Image (cartoon, rainbow, N blue to C red):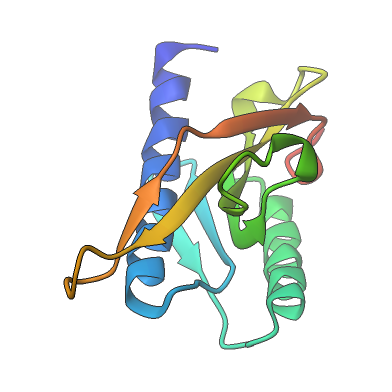
Length: 148
């Protein structure tokens, strides 16, 4: 993967983590959301008002499938507030899960990743709530959406 392709993925991942972190600090959770980097370099954000996380995620998947058919999706990130898989849980069970797929990885066997970013909600004294992020844990698998 080229440095340019890496930069595109890092850019959208950084924005997705920031959005999730900000929501967590305000409301202690966040609704699933979808971010797409299109072929012109613009990041598009998709959200919905559905409160049920599973239903909201399914609607975002439908949106993603429709957008991928337009063949202008370069990088996608589907984010959800979830628990860490048991084999990765240490002291922090909560995580931001980022499903990442990139057009530049389409020909690779392991072309998609879940990045689990463990987090803790913290407060010092009577101060404001803040989110402590831990090192992300990547899990690779074949792409589901951006495919040939």
